[in-house]
Image (cartoon, rainbow, N blue to C red; front, side):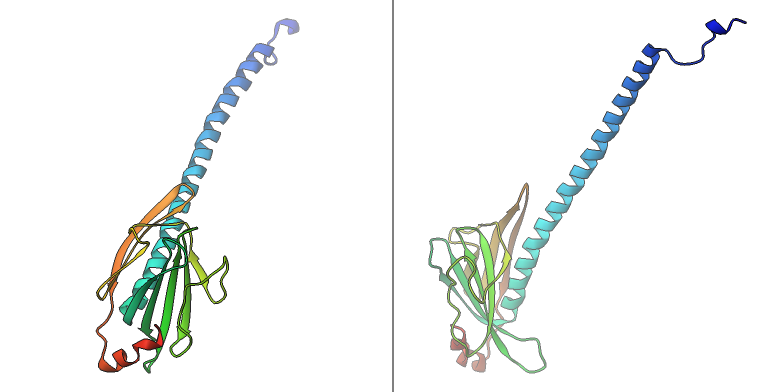
Length: 192
């Protein structure tokens, strides 16, 4: 046998073809991988958006359900709303608290404050970071013409869309105030 004619390796053409095929396979695998990561992030963002919306609506509904009275006020700017609810505490003795939710139309923020009854009335906050108010959620878009709250008799309706990035969630729910006793009615002014 002649050693000069023996095939001992790959030719340059074979090597280029092998590298090109490997590059195509790796590109396809990377595309699938990045698509899966992107889809996972989209689902996570959507789930987070829906969770934020549901937590906000549940917190309001729970207080309204335990409430004896509610009043809805306009805020300092067009589209702002202040919902004040006088609700019973969860302890073994009956205690009352005043809860206020303020929808700020300019940035779609929902703020919360809580006070013991007998303290100064809850009023619409002013400024970007008002003292005594906590931001619950932002990026809300109201469902109702007047804002995110609607008060009809003893029912408080809540309706909004929340938009975070490319994800959005819609909340439409309501809660009915409990029937107030004569003693409850006599103390209603403590929040309003």
